[in-house]
Amino acid sequence: MFSPTEYLWALIGLILTIGGTFLEASVTDFPWHWSQSGIPTHSLGVTYQIGAVLLVGCLGGKNAGAMSQIAYLALGLAWLPVFDQGGGLAYLKQPSFGYLLGFVPGAWLCGFLAFKRPPTLENLAFSCVCGLVVVHLIGLVYLVFSHYIGWGTSDTSIGQAALRYSYYPLPGQLALICAVTVLSFILRRLMFY
Image (cartoon, rainbow, N blue to C red; front, top):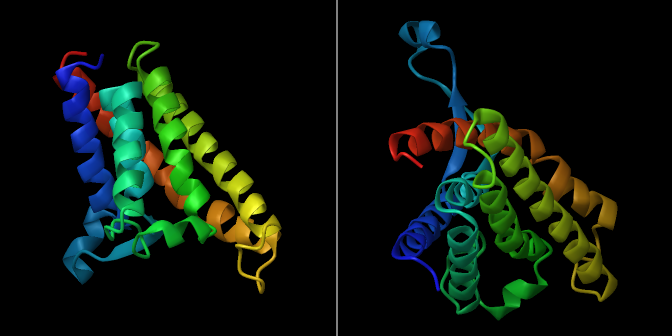
């Protein structure tokens, strides 16, 4: 049976994942440039969604990470518009749905590895990278599967879809991993676990 804190972290993870779906990740210029031109932001080309998935794994553990993502998928497939382009069972035919499926084992693996060793920056970063690799592997397998059975868009090849969904977002996702690593390191020190 799961502990109450795991349920709490699963709820926090669900809320963060839903919120992160609609918030675009960006960075600012260096502070010494702010007086000249305000605080300009530059988009990373990704949302905070994958950061939320990995953060709940690093802070809540494997069970909370997996539960939050199962609940996220259930809400989205039950026609609540929590996915990027809406929700419902028709979303199963979206080429990006495999990446959403990868959130469950990705969050689980991230949480498993984050609590297996002491919470150092290196260990937390490694657990986040492993979780991201799992998300991309499952996403790519689903991409090939959906293209093979004819669910993918006919005007896009598998290679172009893989570039669009895995390669192009990768630098922004790696920047999010850096932020998640530092944030989870600090929060785990503050919460004494």
